[in-house]
Amino acid sequence: MQKKKAWKSAAFLAVGVMAVSSACAAPSDSGAKTVQKEEAAPLDQSGEADAEDGQPEIQTAAVSEELQEEGKDMDIKMDVKELTITKGYKGINDTNPLMTQRFGADPYAMVYKDRVYIYMTADAFEYDSVKSVKENTYSKIHQINVISTDDMVNFTDHGSVNAASGEGVAKWARNSWAPAAAWKEIDGKDQFFLYFADAGGGIGVLQADSPTGPFRDPLGKGLITRETPNCADVLWLFDPAVLVDDDGRAYLYFGGGVPEGKAAAPGTGRVVELGADMISIVGEPRTIDVPYLFEDSGIHKSGGRYYYTYCTNWQVDEAGTEQYGFHNGEIACMVSDAPMGPFVYRETILRNPGSVFGLSGNNHHCVFNFQDQWYIAYHTRVLEKAMGVEKGYRCTHIDAFEMQDDGTIGEIRQTLSGRKQIRYVDACQENPAACFAVMAGVDTVAQDRSEQNAGGVDMVLTDIDSGDFIKVAGVDFAGRQPQTFAASLRCAQNRTADGAIQVRADSPEGELLASLPVSGLTDKLEFAECATPLLASVQGVHDLYLVFAGGGYEVKSWRFSEQGIAER
Image (tube, rainbow, N blue to C red; front, top):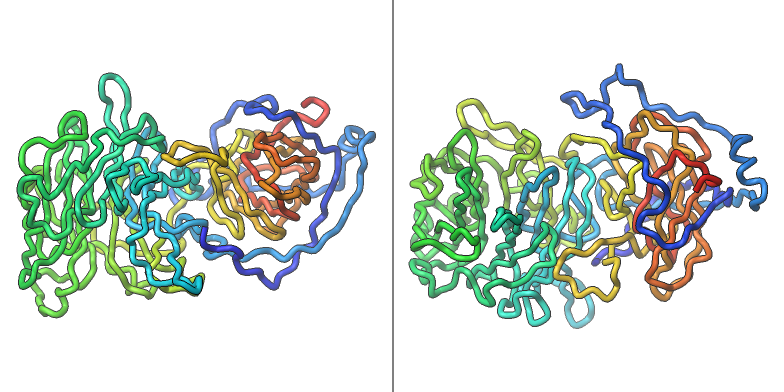
């Protein structure tokens, strides 16, 4: 990505690099015997563990007699090193922005089964002739970033879909902005559709057999173009939103721009029904009468009513109108009893993020429901602000809100703290390393280093240096008695792997649960599973920190096991 290296804090951590009875298995996707997942400890309405279910507990201990017996033929030594913990680009307890290893703008959420997938415009640094970061022109964007979550706090990085350009999936398109996604069962098989804007000149669609791809171009051309009826005079043919209704019929919303002299009624919003195949349209797109429209169509359904949401233009305050009560660049809401309208203005639901976090800009959002909770995804400029750049590069936030009994939403509060965790992470299942709540210093890369990315690839942690870490929020040890910690590792390309992974509870300086030595890896594509005994017993639910010492290695996954080293 564009970072490297994140700040180093002044705090120092004494790290014990233990080489105690560690074991590396041959490369394998299955690794040690899988422990069946238990139900997570229940959450109360605050999202915290219920007190009567037992408080988190760590029992600190020296290496036990049993553990020493297991390791009696191994070299047991303590090599104390001093690490400077890398400081990330967001607070250690903040859930916004969702990721800091890459930017992500114009977020769109798709709920599929028990996960929500977030698709984002892949903002990336542009540089001038002297290699200084310059203002974001958006003209070089041809990728879509994808992440997902099942607990709303830890997000799995699925990499980037190379959607447009000569090397992308849709070779006819120059850019891929403002994605929207939906899924539908077609001919007995779930199919996934990724709509995107080719700059302001049209809308394309990609199709896949999974939410993350790989995607293909089913049309070889745009779905919505200047030749589409009632679209030739839409200034900006972009910013799609899609709704699959309860009856299976689907609708596409798009458009934007302000013709001269028409700030109050631009007339550039459109809606059209999609065909049953999701890659064609039915009839002619209709004009949506949207007051002070700028861009950013959004759509959601609640209580049998349809909510069209959008970003107001930058002439509102100049006009001095009090008719609607909104201001420049805010998210306004209209309501209808039918998916194609007519829509009636209802309220303003989101201020421009610049009024909250500083650094104003275009306002782009998506409203969705996941596990009976309403959320809004939107972008801000807080990541570039933390990096000291401030050139128009955006990152994604999500905050929760409630639909009121009268069908109104009200102004949604924008935060850095973000959302509550809605389920815990099973400590004894295999967990991808590219799934975390907070990170500092590391990056992610496709597991297959030669992959030409159309999506659908596994990501691994890379670019690891001493002091870097990831935080996995809410890891559940309830009912477990783990004996070992294991991780799937390989040598980074053209590097020498050396160091250790420190496993700590509740903070980067927290109780040391395990120290996994990293050595003996070679520069190959295969991963090897390495394991080490625990240095302390642990119960309850804890935030887990993997703190990295040394470098030159990549991490695919991790897990705890109730088996000892000798049993593996």
